[in-house]
Image 1 (cartoon, rainbow, N blue to C red):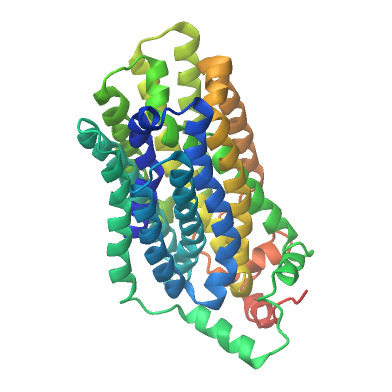
Image 2: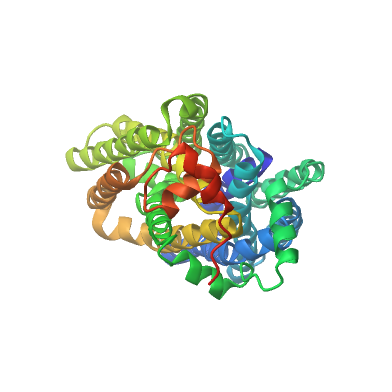
Length: 427
């Protein structure tokens, strides 16, 4: 779970540091956004590289190498002397995190049993939320001394600690089998990206590919990273002005999200992915609605605080906890890395635009219209999940794959052996 802590802290560390970095480097609003846009651009590159790396090096080895490279990039960020230097180091950090976002769900899906797969994947989101909270709270503790460099150094320490644990883990059996299959068939094209993309858009996998791509868009378009990245600025809009209100209260929001994700981890294998996702998305919409009401009626600051908590609780118990499971479960072994990468590509491209332009949008149209737009997108996301998301609780990876390959139809129990004996589709 140290990977989740690292990713969460990385996402919120700059939020606290931004209050100090803005004055240190005399940044404009657009330049402030570039600090997050650089990371988001790196995430996109990492997502594109992730599929090839996890299939070539292995799930475990990929995570070990990227953790070491992340530590080196953190050292560059900590020693930055200008905005270009800091943006460049943030880009490299983002690239490593983008690979991790591809590799971790695959490692979890292939290592966990059918009964525990959902729960373990959600616990990763718990760790990520705790990491976000740590980023804000550490920012509060270090803000008084102006220690923005130390704020940015902590995730490097977490990444180094995660490496020591990953070294002890074995590689997954499914990756080993994939390597054996490739050696047995020297003409296999699963490792060639153009062939993989053609296969994913073939009639067998097109429905799943479009489904996970759209989910990836909604994860970011509903506004989660706008809130994670820019919580201090949003709290300023709400009416808070002191360090406690700008850094500790956002930390409490993330802690509430961690609790929600933990509760989801305990219940997801009982209630299922689909129901959890629908309830979570509805709560996200309620949170945005509270923000709209607060800005429209000049309500007390606590209404906005409550709105952000409700949104994060909904996200961490729904989208944040569940959507990555769909990509990891649905694709067969030779496409699983590519499936996660394609989902992330849409997700992170959307995130890039939010990172760069959310503050400009907030300043241009105000809080009410900004959160009204997010509410409309969240409503569309709920409708998409309601009509198209399947329930995969209690289903093996082979069953889930057969569902998508069979035109969104669950296979009869007696049909499973024949279905899984089919060779992988070649481009």
